[in-house]
Amino acid sequence: MIRDITIGQYYPADSMIHKLDPRTKLVGTIAFIVSVFLFHTFLGYAVAGVFLAGMILMSKVPVKFIFKGLKTIFMLLLITIFFNMILTPGEVVWKLGFLKVTKEGLVLAGTMAIRLVFLVIGSSIMTLTTTPNQLTDGLERLLRPLNKIHVPVHDIAMMMSIALRFIPILLEETDKIMKAQIARGADFENGNLIQKAKNMVPLLVPLFISAFRRANDLAMAMEARCYHGGDNRTQMKPLSYKKRDHAAYGVMVAYLAVAVGFRVAGL
Image (cartoon, rainbow, N blue to C red; front, side, top):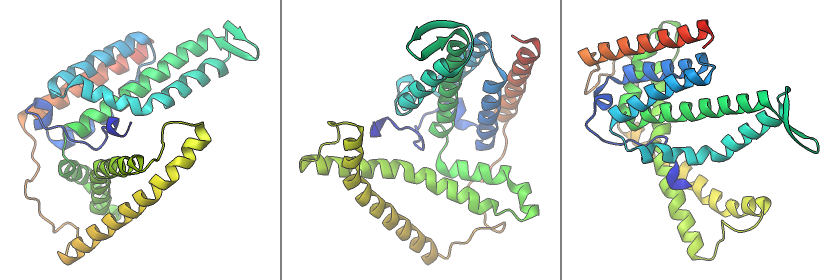
């Protein structure tokens, strides 16, 4: 399961999505998330699915690589579906003891499952096609107006960038520790849920120690290089909108207009 986590990973490719300004991709991701909640029928979700499929094809990221990230939320998806089916009141279609599955519950469970899958895939496309440095620069530029009310925008963007960078590093470290402990006889697969949780303790301790050590080394390296953020800090590659970014904004506006139209029309 460790290898199935794709959040924070970057997939290099020569695609139109990769070439877009990071601000465009951030705004586009937010617009897609908003549209997912605007649609409330399966016809609307079909429109969102077609739009998402088009973005996946344009990104040139393998479909298997994108859907691999869904394995990490499989249990959350099952729990969401189960509780929506049995806790939503309405017309009972199946009953077993005190468990009642309603028609409305099935519809709501399907809706929530589609929304969760779309949110994960939509967010994954942004992180897979944008480097952490680009995400930091784009987020900082988008939040720059908050500097007027003394919000530390640069520090917030830097913390998010470091967090994204640490995700694949910690996953790799976790994999190494698990392999080392399995070679020494550790068992992470067998046993009940409580036993599996106990077996994770020898894994978490060295992982936390390694994470704190890496964080301390990074802090010392930044201090040794006299790093300090702020408005006076320049960028090696300043961000600038191109024609493709304006075209992408036009597509986003049209897509949101369709989502609002579906919401108003009740489709």
